[in-house]
Length: 166
Image: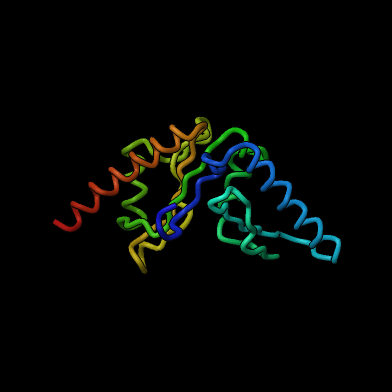
């Protein structure tokens, strides 16, 4: 993440296996506790890792959260076990041309998500009419492929934005 939150890396690539397992186990325990007191529905558990490697939960919320829509998109397009087979990189508030121009740009650069390939760029949110920005999801079968899509998208957007401002 940037100095301020600007997107997600799903699943987190720099998290050691032991911390990942602990994070999942602890989050599951929070969900079980919520269920025992009668909660039914989505729950989002947010955590950080401190300088000593300890996992600290900062909050958990019984509601749809900041990446619920990303999870739903990934499950529908990639399958319930997408976390085992894919890496998703997202960014929000990315400067972009109007949506119709963006789709042409993505198609021309062969960046659009392809169901057969199960990789590419998905525009998760279009705010171009109001803020001139989008939120995207770069999907790859591994981190390098997702990074490549993200990089190629940024180059295409930079070139398109230069044309608009000149």
